[in-house]
Length: 319
Ligand code: SF4
Image 1 (spheres, protein in one colour):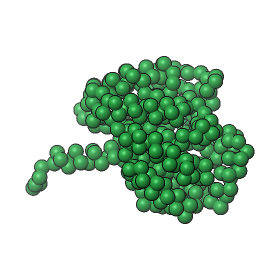
Image 2 (spheres, rainbow, N blue to C red; image 1 turned 90 degrees about the horizontal axis):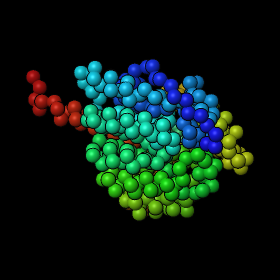
Image 3 (cartoon, rainbow, N blue to C red; image 1 turned 90 degrees about the vertical axis):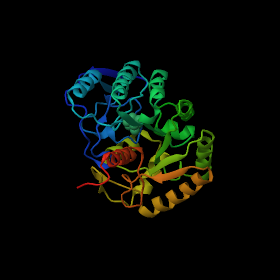
Image 4 (cartoon, protein in one colour; image 1 turned 45 degrees about the vertical axis):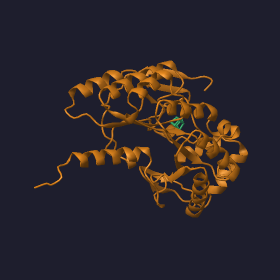
């Protein structure tokens, strides 16, 4: 964003409390900031009642100390923590990155794994932390399209697609193979054959093996943002795609519009086939497509790892 303000505020509530929604159920989630400099036009978190006004990001400056204190009091520490449920810990601001570094360092020092999705650039000091414990890092890079038009229209304040590809390369260099989250797919814009082949071709060069897919969905606040921020052409395209759809409860949101089921079904099938041609297994995000057969994304896989680990720790025979 051209003009913005970072407000350093203390976080008051406890930090390592388990989430109670969707695939994050039971796992602590941490956001370094309230609000996000990236301001994606489709971001659902911008519509939260507690979200700061546009151009303001609240940085929880005391997070490292709070986490340290909580961990010192806990008898059982969580095995995994999920970052970035309503913000991005790699927003390009030195104060945000410095709190992020400390939080990650403390978690990894306690043997706690971290899972995160980011569109930001991971700075070298954080990559050095990851290098020490690659098995504790589950990461998804958010990348919908390589098209400059899409980037400038929908995510204008994020690092460029090319920079995010470099992120993937750097992660690979330290032994972490990130997955890619292709979300939100914009019908007729980012799901054309040529767009998809260009994207999957580059991901193949970087040896990416897995991607998670989800088409754009609307909530009232997202709809308002898109109407305000997109070009007239994209605005009317999206209006026509969702015109026949009703608001429904999806996950924790009571008012969500999904694209027609048939459109998503066909679209996912086609995208998965193209991904397969490039050696990439693409799965459908189950949380955002409850009416389709989906798969677990990396947050969901955190839960699987927890279950596997718990099972491994159980005695073989129980009386
Ligand atoms: S990066 Fe994520 S949290 Fe930040 S504005 Fe974009 S969608 Fe929202």
